[in-house]
Length: 276
Length: 294
Image 1 (tube, rainbow over the protein chains, first blue to last red):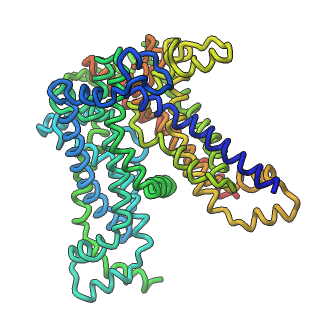
Image 2 (spheres, rainbow over the protein chains, first blue to last red):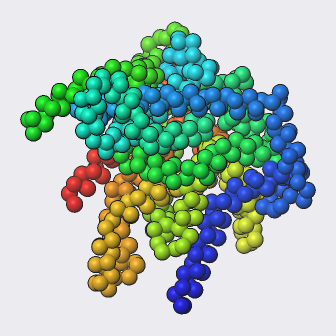
Image 3 (cartoon, chains in turn brown, purple):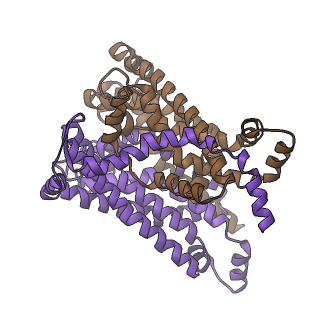
């Protein structure tokens, strides 16, 4: 009985401490996003005296001809294109690298692994995209995101495929599948669980990316949501309420994703990390 | 074995190399090719269209400028401290998440939560928390009667404040990797330890710590490489300042780029690449060899 009570106390302490450390910083963002400019300037952890939440959201959204709305659209397109590309190229590459083992695929495997470690050479990539007329464009940035997420996603696919028995391939071949039908009609549908994980992790990763949009989409024409926040930081230095409202708005998609897919995000991160 | 091999070879034509083409095109052109070119362009003065070969001049000016050398040592401090703390704190948090606590699910969710926020959002959040007079950090310190420091404005402190933020954001990843490692330890070991009269401390020291080694190696490598490459937090919190007190390689690469010093920027990139390779590959070998010796 005593031990039970003791455990309950430990439980409560754990919840309070972990919330204080990991949730309170974000709580400050939420609360101050609902305050007036003067009240938010104090940066207090307190409820707003009067709720200005909707007003602040309106201010953020209407700023500079709805720049944030356009940025949302851009980020969605960028994320969508990148994720489609990542799934297509990584699943196909992972399929061959796992199924066909020889010296050639072995060295390709190392090349792919290298992408997890080697930092991208950004300026030569800009030069290259300029040559291809893709610099400062969303499709160009999407290509970069595909290349940067390629290694991690391919490893996710190879490790998943090692649990799919080859007998399934053989059965398909006996039924008369060619290489393309074998992959697209039999293997790819079987990989649905890992494809879902790859989609979720890559989507969060691309959506939250700040460094690559900063390099590859300079200027105000094709902002992503992270870039609007970056420019807000410079312009709204004294308006913490609007800055926090923007943080809240652009974090919302990731938060919703996290609430729905938490298990998959965590297990995917773990699996990818250990395999890599 | 031979039959097995020939069977595999017979299937090979169904595993057509043509599947590799899209991936290798994108990865090869957008990632591998620029990486190789960066070695060449680091020896040039370059305006993205015409280049002049200048030998080692970019590297010389890199190592002659105090600010740039400082960024190199900052990068190493950043990587060592942030990964070191994540290795230790992640393990402790993971043990808490694997305990008998009824709230362990909540703990895991909360600890991992900062990782899905963007580095920029976290950077701005912590800039407000670290505000010298109004920020929550110093408000709390003043309740204890301590005059809090200027976290991001003090050149001797700025880098460490960013590292602290990095740990807050990233410790969740280490924690969930450790959790997977702890769950892979057979419960028989713990039971045997209980039979021998062990308490939770001896269980932790004699079973969890040694047997969680593979997970720990993963945490070390991942967080170390992540630390060396870190950019978003530095750029959103201090832009490398005050002065260049919190500059790291990634922020120097960006600064040189926006100022038009492309050759110098690429030299920084190559130095980062070499630094990561020189540290990451031997570290990987070393950690794995120790594992084999067990």
